[in-house]
Length: 299
Length: 244
Image (cartoon, rainbow over all chains, first blue to last red; front, side, top):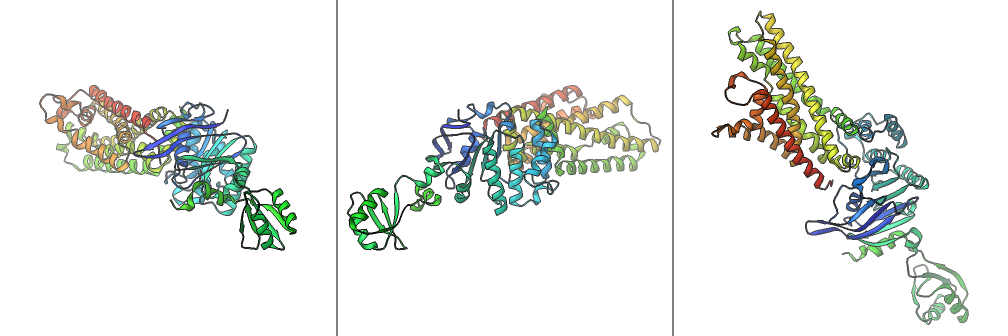
């Protein structure tokens, strides 16, 4: 059974559909990156999984059940939704104390998570004076408070400095390694590339891709980079191979699409041109992301 | 019980709560002290003393607002997400909130009685004036205490329905102080069943005893308003989405 599941989820706000017939599952033991351009419906989907909003159709399930039926909610799911969701006049420790009280957790746990997010020093200060990074840490501390089996984090890297990012990455990896479920949304694709095992990409409330990080970045079309001493002659030879498209790249290499390495090598041998390089091109996550979300078309 | 503790902590860990109650108490204390200390002895009849005992206007405003803030603050600052994540069915959290604001209102009532009673009757004694019968004094203070608790709950109910913080504060104050006294102008005694008159009955002011409900009845009427408003507010909180 998947830890988190969204099945035919639809959420309508007035006339616009924020989420449109979205289905996916999230499994334990890995970090799942939840990607999409702004307004794609990531936050709406996460809120539905947390039972904070009622789907217009379909369902969002936590451990196979609607989130409203969770028995020990904070021990089941920890969430960090927005870094600004604190009463500005309450200090960091008290924010966590309130939360601990509502879940029947001991106060010592508050000190533990404060230590984990390195916020012990600032815990006595009112949140009003916190930087965005400190608020993010406090939000994470709140998510971790109940030592939950599932973490749902909306843009947790926002406002973190490079050390904070690294710390977050290690934390998420460690949580997944312990067998927990981690769903983390982000628009910082490079950050996700270093953290996530699995990717869910949505656009306009619809699923556009769900794949492991490797599958996703390799993509479907095979693209090969070919370098040779005699690029012109090789280009002509490769263009003659059925199904191949050849394009010169900036650094004097050729990018060949539509045929595999074997066929390229054979064609080069037949033409009597020595190959200096023959390698698959992995599109970067950024490129693939723009590709699947159609962002570059400027829609 | 866990949720109740959390709600009490929420109220106690925000400075606004204490500042509002502090200012309310201070102003009422000044009034009680100045009046009983300075006014002509001849005017300190029983009615005058009762007037001092129930001079609670500003604290009533503060408690209504405090009740409103207990729920609208959650939506304004986005903490509602966290609160209802810890209580996904939501109505237990609302029930805990009601209990917490009732307790806070009652505590404010205790503080008021101590300050007001100490000053009023201390000063009366020092001016060689006899206090009214202890039973009367007690019943008025008991009424004040209950009304404080219920007013806080009243604010919570309005806040849960209106949700927008400023809108809810205006709605609660306008309803209680402006609209609710109006039905008194209608023929019959329908006006007695509106919240501000119920508070008047609860305070047991002898001045208008022929009009209005008995003290205990006034308490039940106000409690019914509170339960009604909080029930409607809770249904809305459970039904509506918690977004941002």
